[in-house]
Length: 599
Ligand code: OXD
Ligand code: MN
Image: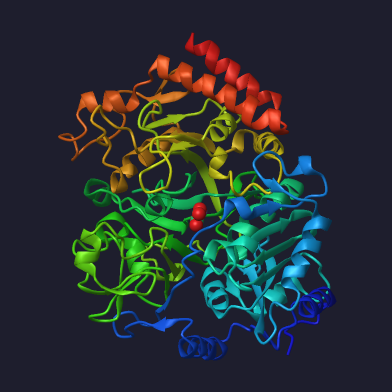
């Protein structure tokens, strides 16, 4: 039985049924009864494995096809009528051509299968910043994950109403999981997403990257708001006031860790606390008071498991202790629980590695294999997180005081610096880049540009996206958040990290908050405002972060920066402008200004 009278939804679902020809159609109302029946069915068919229900209540395990373990950027498309509107950072195809090509693949793809119709809200139901989506899929795994990652079920339709056409249409079929025919396609002008031949989270949980970033960034441009690849955290100060900060880092730079940071002892004693609002995506819009307000459109965390442990991220680990879905991690057969690299020191002896082979975990890892896939994931409800913000469900969102950009840079970029103003901050965002690590394939230490950490997620022309940032700054005026850049990854001559990171990043947040409040001065340099000597609190870590180390952390090497600016000019000209990116003149002006200041 359908859950809505909305003719726009009914018509579209009928079209999708006619195309994919499922044997059965089930509308997902979000009730525990229905979800339990689906969990039972998935366990019975082997699609999911029930884990130890005493140690991990409500937790399930899933393994994807080994050819289907990550997002596939080379098979991800933005299909706008004009090619220039997709811009140089996206693959493009004419929408008519793409619909025709994919319709052939979807034709009868759900024969003999059940189609699940999932209504969901990105953002708290009833929030003026929230948006509705409907995903049809032939995967129970998708239904159960969407239940954690979004506000899923009949209430989402209540929010849409009986007549509105303002919902994002998501079609997913795992089809044959054929990597040669895998497509993740956004049609921003039609509010439509078509995903086929994958069953991996980032490609199939269509509310996440496809909607909340690619489609939403396009909607935000047209409607006057921003969809960003940012965590949102709140810092409660000893006086009780909470300051909210958002931060954009490329993958593998510790967004989830910063979002769930535990302050050092000294800060805790003084009464500081950190709250998580989101770990991956922020939707931001000016509020009635003219300030920028942020919501986390998601309802859970789709986090990378390897590396997560009690020390690196206690709060994330705690979040995975119940009602969590684990994908492509290893199973510890001694008690039917999960394991991944760095969870504990010693791997389980009696293990099942992520592809499903039973192995001696100690010998297997000693041979250089990993038991869990490096991109294995947990899907955990946000409400499990011990430091979840009391404002998590606030429909108005939280007021943002500071926006942080960052990346992984061995040299050049100091620990922290502040932009002179919003336009300069937008330039800083456009310059976000990260050096590749040994964990990824390809050469180590290669610089990858990832503007605003959004390169794979901007649903339109990157130059227009930067212009939109500039427009938002104009609209916000002196109420705009202050913009900063951080680098937790500076190294010494021997390749050792010189900043302790993790909880100690609180010390940098402290300086950022003081800058926002105007209670600490700064050094004006060619690249921006840098902390003055002694202004980053090192109480308790003086042995590690000596004054000499702090000098290195905050040093601005003119030669390196001259090279950096030359590389940015090359990037703007060759990678963006020459390929159809419409770069605003104001950003070229910033480049000129930094260059002049460096001379
Ligand atoms: C993610 C990503 O999964 O950025 O969040 O790839
Ligand atoms: Mn992400």
